[in-house]
Structures are given as structure tokens and as C-alpha cells.
Length: 97
Image (cartoon, rainbow, N blue to C red; front, side, top):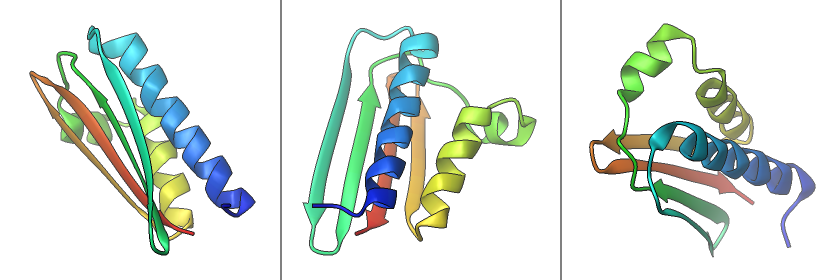
């Protein structure tokens, strides 16, 4: 079992990553993997879309979704990493439980 703030954060971050993939990636496949490793929970959300420039999206301020995901994870003392290329995007989330 997870504490409520952890559950809500994971739910919202996974929801946002899936929504972004559906709206913007142009891909056909989306996968979500949730694992618990000791005192941490990890989520990996991956698509096979066209990708985007992560740094440019963060700097432009136009990506409210990316900002809110990072903020939610940081509030729990977790880590959020986004990797994107022409072969797709992967969102890595890890939070303490």
C-alpha cells in the first residue's frame, strides 16, 4: 500500500504523461510500468512517437503539464527525468513511499 499523497502524485503524473503522448506524440504504442523497489516507487511511461526537444519545452514555459509533473514529484522528494528522441519519449519517475 502507498500513502495517499504518493498515490495521487503517481496517478496524476502518469495521467499527464499518457495524455501528452496521446495528444502530441503521433505514436501507436504507449506503455506504463510501475514497480516498487524497497522504499521507492518507480513509474516508466514510454511512447513510440516522434519525440520533442525537452529542454526547449521546459524553457519556453508553454508546457504547463511538464512543469506540473516536475513540481508534484519534487514536492515528494522524488526524481523526474524525460528522455525524448525521434524514436519516442520516455518519462521516468521515482518517489519515496
